[in-house]
Amino acid sequence: MGTGIVSILLYNFPYPAKWLKNLGIAIFVFNIALFVALLIGNVFRYIRWKGLFKATIVNPSASMSWGAFPMALATIINMISLACVKQWGIHWARLAIGLWWIDIIISVIINIGMLFIMITRQTHTIETMSSTLLLPIVTTVVAAANGGIVAEAISPTMPDTARSIIITSYIIWGTGVPLAFFIITIFLHRIIIHGIPNSEALPSLFLPLGPCGQGSFGIIILGKMIKTLAFENNLGININNQDKLIISNSIYAGGLITGLILWGLAFCFYILATIIILDYIWFKDQNFLNHQSFNISFTSFTFPIGVWATASHSLADELDSTFFRIIATILSVQVIFQWIYVMILTIYKLINGTIFDAKELKEFQDGIPPRRWSGYTKKQSLKP
Image 1 (tube, one colour):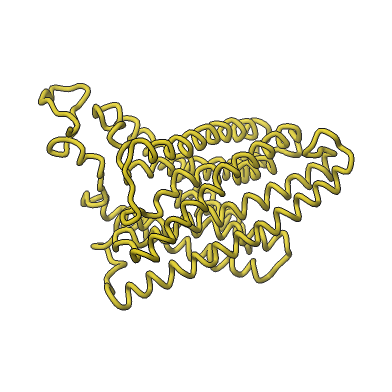
Image 2 (image 1 turned 180 degrees about the horizontal axis):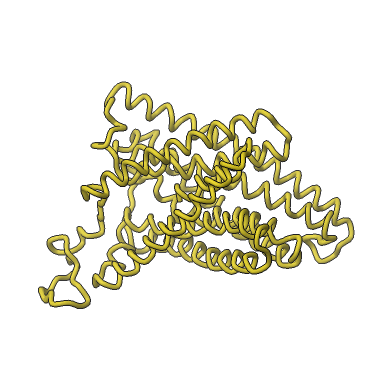
């Protein structure tokens, strides 16, 4: 996710340069390799170890990470639409469409499925709640916004397909943003009543930026594409094409206003998360950002802020605003440097093995699940 959003920010930098686009493409290729490697590793892990998949699903902490998979895939689809479709044409457009539909299906399954699991198979309390509950919910917000990007890329050659994608994206946007606001409300109640999360989860305070920033970007680009299809392709969102230009302008204007409101909410959470973390560093732990404190939650310094940067860039383009362009530039540079920091410390802790914290393994005796094959014969099972 973090690597993917960096490739997008570099390729679509507010003040573009050819070398930035080339660097964005290079990181895009690296992101594909990283995604495929992690996907293969996880599939092998669940096949190799019996009961591990179920243990992950029912674990209130580990199961939230399922949301990272479709969001990481969305960044790849995004770059295919931005960089490959215009360069190499219809075949890449079809690939983007196919992958987008796969991403939509996976996102909806994880969104609604994990909400079902939270209600029926897991135990959550206000005291132990964290903003990671947003991860499976935000999947559909990201997928919906991605639909706008795919539609924009294919609209010159496949306007009818673009229209179908946009309509679907609005529906999918509705399955994510409102639910995310419900979770954010509960989380805000939790940190007001019970205080900030422990230091290990402190970076996750940036996670509410995800649905706000990506929701803002998504509703803006979907409205923009409704207007584009009406004016350039003579396609209205409704079957009756009478007054389609007026309707499309209204949808575009409504999306722009909604995007501004969501951007403002993201700004609120950005400032709040930043000052809380700075306050913690200043008064409690000045070594918070060193390698001893680093854990997987520090990846929250990248993707959530990155999608808010894309919303800022979108507003800069639509409003022809220097203010939003400068904000988008500052946020993009911040995310790029924070990604470098996270990548370096991730590699460091990957080498020494301390990056791994598989909480789902606590469900097994001795913390080791039984293998499905090999000479290992010791019988082990989930704890009763």
